[in-house]
Length: 261
Ligand code: ADP
Image (cartoon, protein in one colour):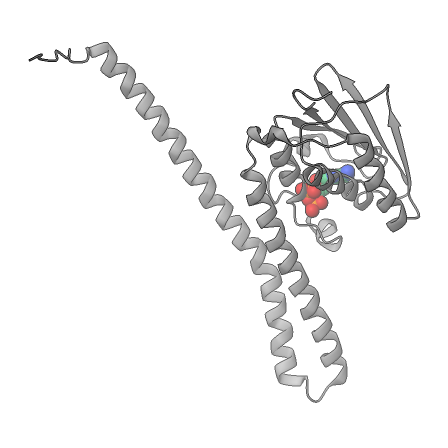
């Protein structure tokens, strides 16, 4: 018969545990507050199209049977607002999915050159007034540690922005470069640019420099937040440089697939 002797924790140990516990509680509280803020922001974003739709539906209800013009206009406007709501819900789901990407998803891989070429071909077909230039520096033979679907999603978000926020200059370039264990992708446009004091906010959810312009182009301020979430999920990073009236450079870095060649 052995009696287990357990020494009681010392004052120091209790002190250490208290610090750890308090830090954990702080993190939890912060995360709850962020979650609450997100729900508030998302509800706010949904409210605008719902209110506009409500206005048109009540117009239709009152005048729709008698007035053909109101019938046509309000029906069209309601359908457009419904599209916005559907797109917003879709993007919110994409953001939520992107948050679930784990670094362990590193088993997947994509051929970065082939993926960029494919996406650019589609953009060129859709936006004939633009010239898309692709520059690969050196010989990139490695596979990148990201799923093809996610790489495509990031490229579409960034190229879409380059197109949306370009006025007169219609040249958009993509450059890729190998840096040790990573690949760096730079997308550069010569569009309207972003004021320096707002540059650090563009990756925040729902942030838009010019809300009216973004809305007019069908944006909702979630694209870059989704791109950042996906890239960080795969252990990469994203940043931007810009000059108002000159253009914007967005660059992201992703690791090559481990064990790949
Ligand atoms: P949005 O759907 O509004 O485009 P994003 O999250 O993709 O949302 O971008 C956030 C904001 O950053 C945009 O509303 C826009 O003001 C600014 N922005 C993003 N990319 C560019 C760019 N290439 N040129 C100028 N402004 C940009």
